Picture 1 (tube, rainbow, N blue to C red):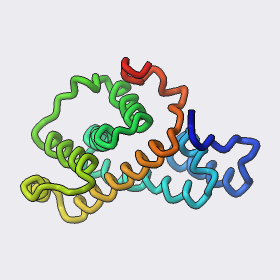
Picture 2 (cartoon, rainbow, N blue to C red):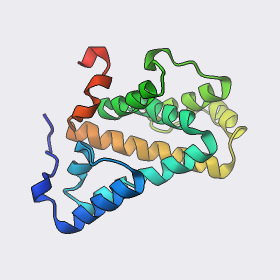
Picture 3 (cartoon, rainbow, N blue to C red):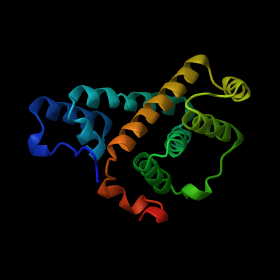
Picture 4 (cartoon, helix red, strand yellow):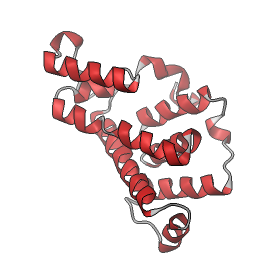
Amino acid sequence: MARINPLSPQDTPVPLQSAYSLHTTTWNARITNMKATLGHSQTAFEVYMEWYRLYDSIKRFLGLRPAYLFAYTVSVGSNCPLCTTFFRKIIIDNGEDPAAIVFNEQEQLLMDFGSAIAQQQGRIEDALFARISAVYTTQQLVELIAFAGQMIATNIFNNVVETEIDEYLYNYLPLTQK
C-alpha cells in the first residue's frame, strides 16, 4: 500500500489539470500513480516530468533501444519495482525477454555505466569512465549522467512512497512479483 496516495481526479486543482493536459499531449503519456502522487505538489510534478526532455535527448544520440535499456539498467540498479516494471513493458513490447537481453559491446559498456551509477551512488571507477568517455562526447556524457540522476530520483521517489504499480503494468511484472 502506498505511503502517499495519488491525488484523485476530483481533488486535482485546475492549474494541475492544465499541467497534466500539457504533459499528456506533449509526451503522449498517461497520468500514472507516480505522476498523480507527484501532483500533490505541482512544482514537484513539473520538475520530475523534465525526465521526458532528457530521455528524448539521449534517444537522439543513443537510439531508442539503448536508451530504454539504459533506463531499465538504472532502475534495476536502484531496485525500483515500479520503474523496472515500466521498462520491462517497453522491452517486452519491443519483442525481447528482459532476462535474455543480448548487448553488443557498446551497449554493454553503457549498461555497465548505468548500473555502476545506480549501484555505487555515482562513484564510477576511473577505468569505466575512461572507456565510456572514449565513446561519447562531453555533452552526451553530461546528458547520460543527468538522465541517470533523474532516473534515480524517480526511483527513490517511488521507493520511498511505495508507489503502487499501475494496473496496466501488471502483466509485465516479473513472475516472482505477480
